[in-house]
Image (tube, rainbow over all chains, first blue to last red; front, side):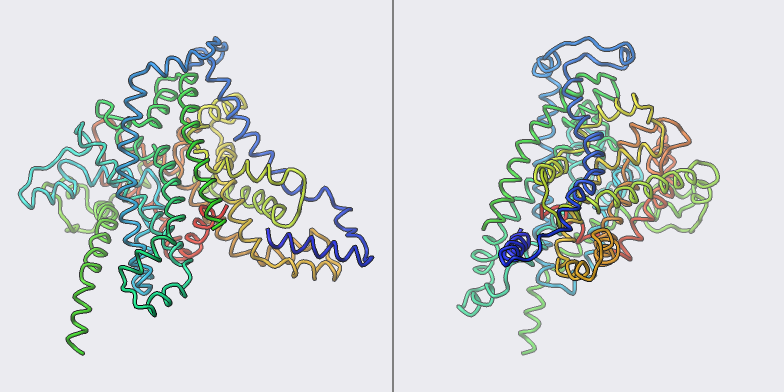
Length: 314
Length: 280
């Protein structure tokens, strides 16, 4: 932004002095358009257009059986059906547990590690590569690793429980336990992002603030309370919104680990949508769920944009 | 003095305890996969499980490469990932350059659209994407899959590269132009060589992303011989019977590119991903 401003000032003063007009720019006025054309074309045809088409699909009763003949138009039928669907409300409920549980663990752990790493760069250099590993493994590998950990007979967790004399748990096959098992897996996978994000934010706090505080005789708790915490707040807000969105939409590990079961105990909204469309073949109904999810995401995205804007201003 | 020091170390104890605890939490599931993959099949299913493999064996690795399509999966994944990376890098670099250096009509509209698409999760568009590829006859096509991946990697890559280009001073380009370079020559000879670290970050990201992705691949690839590594790994799980020895060996093979990146290019990966997520 700033650079552009400086540049436009430079050209206008050049013109005022009677310098030559920026010939090259006039001659190649089409160049920027050519450069962005591939991006615009690809994103329009495989992102924007499909989303528009999806709203049209959501007004039809499109299913695998009538995909070739053409589907009957049902207006808002899919949406009224959705708002009377107890399983949809159930899925929102499950999503809520999943999101709150994941974020709570992931944020707390991420913040503590970020603070430690910030104070101990030497330790951080050795541990950071190991700590980020779960975050860049594929959902398939994360999912099966944890299925193996949770295995009733051969899993390490039950091995440990037996070793200390406790009863083994049927983690993923237990209706009340399964969602928390998924939350633990998701914390394992998601904490590195929060950690890296907050660590980067900590690095951006000017060193002089700490110096001044210590010179004035503040202790480390006071420094955290009055400098680190307030300075970190915008980054925390952005991080929480992003992670909330991602967790709400996340379903790849769930698809691998439980597919929404047992007895729909881990059926988050995202999982429900996928199941409706690709298990039961109800594309129209699935599209309606997707668009309701999009609306929920839109609210969070607006929040994100406003918070980022505010953070940039302060 | 000495006493003070020991008090200091004592006060640090909870911190080290926490770090060790978290380190175990992170490493143990991955260790368990590695350990299982090197056990002979009789030991994998022995109860209680052995913490350390008693006999190291490559039996499972030999089995997955000779008895299953894992090898073909690796080749398919390499094709998809390399095509995705090359295409995305080309498209995103041109666009990002245009966004940083030019002012043109519709620039901010386009930028906001890209940001919006970055925030919309891929899952939302998966139904129409499937219907569209079905209509276009692009199902069961590795290049089609690479095209579909563009919708996921391009928004982030564009922002990553725009941030990088913004860090390269315009003055260098202007100097080259005064010396008689055309706009395209400037891009080719000056800016792109200077942007190599940024391009490397973007390439690593795109490659790892397409290597790891499986939901869209599962939706768009239905034929056996086209399955990517991740989909082949899924095949080891049959109803009520999982060959854990072979499955874990296949998982280790699937982890290889990620491990390589962690070991050799960790810094690029972190800076790139954070750059994409924070600055918009």
